[in-house]
Length: 203
Length: 65
Image (cartoon, each protein chain N blue to C red):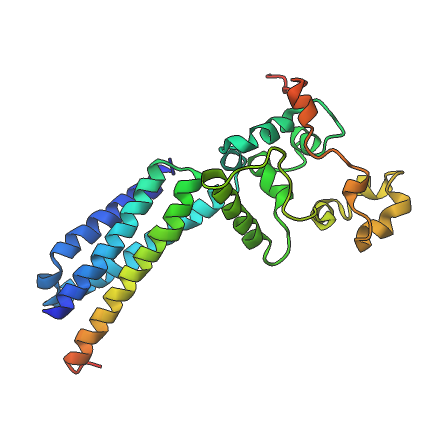
């Protein structure tokens, strides 16, 4: 369920629209009635819808939203894989990314239309989930862009000074070498299958 | 009054759009979000446009434009 303020504003907006719908004729005969119609039938529904869709788009970028489809369950569990070499696990467990937007942090491009592309991909996911058939082994629609990694790591000291990175830095920056050439495990599903999972100590 | 009928039709569409969004907000899933955004929002937009067109038509008929 969406937050109470969004639900209440939608309910109030609907109630006002219904009231105005049945009182349209008498209201249209008076000046203030016409203003009420303008606010109630044009401005209010548009504003309420804008708030609703804005919240919806933001909510659709959250980790729990992505993992609400059963196809993504193993990928969700892989965030807890006890494997420091697994990219998703190490980013999540070490809080290198916002845990509420774990999937989105790495799977949305940071270019001008990155968000739009991510949402269009999301629509494809929804289609596959409800109407199509999810493949046995999930794969990205296109090769992973190292630019997404560099968006955060590009000028990071640990990244630039890593012994393994130094000889290939120019290739990484130029895009001729992918980060995934060496970092081959993104989601460690083997650890998930073997139940080798990490859990933070509760203090 | 034709204007009133057009305004009522616009209100019906906007109301349906809001009702759909309200329903989706109670059962928030990827599917209901897509339904809300792809059907609910266009219905509200269509209702608002219908309302504005009706008002403009009434104003034109009355020589107020």
